[in-house]
Length: 153
Image 1: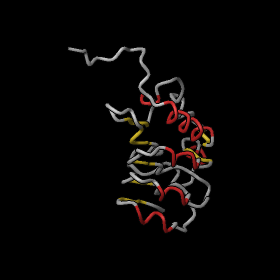
Image 2: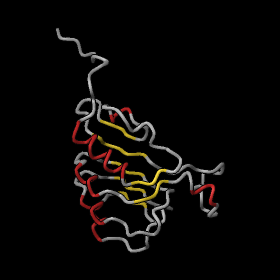
Image 3: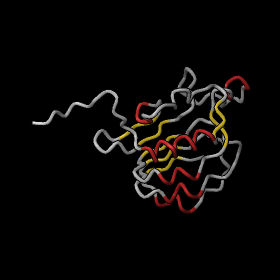
Image 4: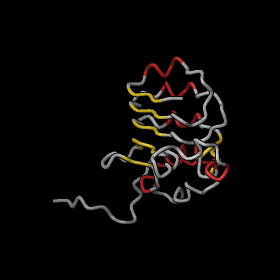
């Protein structure tokens, strides 16, 4: 019988999905270096990335900004020191290539009142999206109506 244990040198991450995540990271502003673990071949071991144990597809991205002691988003009082902990920049359209993505949490970050990317509503398997308190403009693209759980603005 063949052993189901994995060789520790075996790469778990799917190369094309790793490339998508690197492109996503490169378009973000990360003043606090929160994505410092995003290097190497195994994106399934990166902070905030959850992969399926069998297929190794990226299923979840957890990049919620850091909460304060009461559990609220840092920066809700617009303290400049808090905003250094938030991600910003551009949400790369390359994310749509993560075809098995089911969960995306970008809440409590600062995207500078840019529009919510309309491509986010085109994910075929996305069931949960949280972009609340992330400083997106108020207009919600109609494509987001395709999601089963959406938390915005």
